[in-house]
Length: 494
Image 1 (cartoon, rainbow, N blue to C red):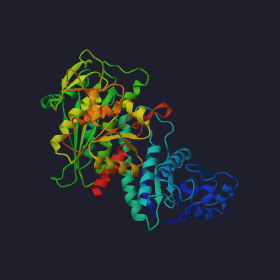
Image 2: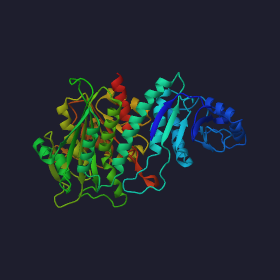
Image 3: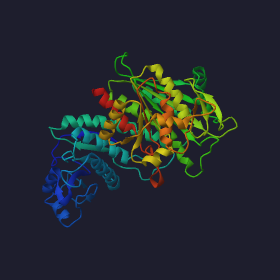
Image 4: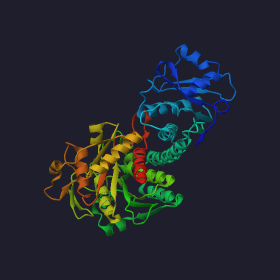
C-alpha cells in the first residue's frame, strides 16, 4: 500500500474514489460542498432524500457521477459539527477502511483534512488516516489463500498549502507506525509451530539487517546459564524448542546518552506447563508473544522515523509446555538477581522470564525501562479489552505514558503497586512466590516484577486484554505499538 500527500484542486483530481466529510443535520464539509458543485448538486439531492444523515462513522458510496475525473465518492459521517473527538475521528476512519475494502477501488483520495477535530491538527489527522486505514485493510495470508484480496493500492491525502508541511510530517509518522503495527500483527498471527523462539530471533536479525542504526545479538541458553538466569531457563525446560534472549540495539543519538529499554514477553506458545490451561481457547496462546512482537514493531517504527534516541529492545522468547522435565508446582528456582522463587503455578511463567530480563536490563544503565506483556487474565477481568493496564514505580514516567496514550488513542489505565500487595507473594520456602492468590492478580504480578526493577525508573504495561481480538474477528491488534511509538516521538522532541 502506497501513501502520499498532494495539493491539488478537486476538479483536476483523477481518482477511483474520493473521500469527503459530512456532519449531522446533513451539513457538508468544505470539500464535500466543492464536489457537490462539480456534480450539479448530486450529493445534496441524495442527502435530501435521507440516504445519509452524517452520524459518526456512517458512510455512503455514490456511483455514476456526472463527472469523469472521479469514479466514486464516499461520504463519511463525523457527527455533530464542532464536537468531533479524536477517538470519534478514528472510529470514522475505521468505517472508511471498510468502505474502501468494499468498493473495490484501486486508488483513492482522502479530502478529510478539512474536518474539525478537537485537539488535533493536520499532522495528527494524516497520521491517523494512514494508521487506521492500513490496520483496517490488513489481511493475514501466510498460511491461508486470500480469494478476496483488497484491490486498493494507493491512498492520496489531499492537503492545502497551509497544512501541507504538517500533513507530510504526519504521513511519515503514520507510515512508520503502520509498518510497525503490521510487523507485530504478522508475527503474532502466525501459529506456534512456525513462530518458535528461533523463528522470532531470526526475524529480529532480518529487521536489524534492514536498518542502518539497528543491530541484533541473540543470547543462547548457555549464555543465560552463565548469567544465572535460573527463572527464565526453568520455563523452557518443558519445551523442545531452545529459548532465546533477543537483544536489539538502536543507536541514533550520542553513545553517552542513556538508552530507553523496551522489554517484551515472547512466549511463542503457552500451554500453562504442568498447571495446564483449559483446552477451550488454548489456540489463542500463540498470542502470548505479542509483547515481544510489539518490541520489534516499535523498533521498526523508530528506525523508519530515525528518532534521535538510543533504544534497547529485549525479548525473552520461550515456550511453556508440559513435559517430564518441566517446572512443577512447588519447585524453587534462583533468579539472576539472586532472589529465590517458589513456583506455585507454572502458568505464571511470564513473570519468570521477565524478571531475569529486567535484571539483565540493568547492564545497559537505562534512562527508563518499559516492559509490555500479555501477563494476566486478571487484567481482562479488571479492565476489559479497552485499555491496557499500566503499572510503574515512577509517577513522571507513568504520566508521560498516559499522555502518549491519549494522543495515540491507544489507551492505558494506571493501576497501583502498593507494598500492601507484597503480603500475597510471601512464601514459606523462598524469597517470593510466583503468584499471589486469586485477588488482584494483575497487581500482584506487577508487584512481583517491581522487586526486580528497584534500581531504575520502570513501567509495566499488561496487554493481555488488548493485544488481540477474540471471536469471529480473531487476530492481533498491534497494540501497544502506537502508544510506545508516540512516547518515543515525544521523548525525541523533548
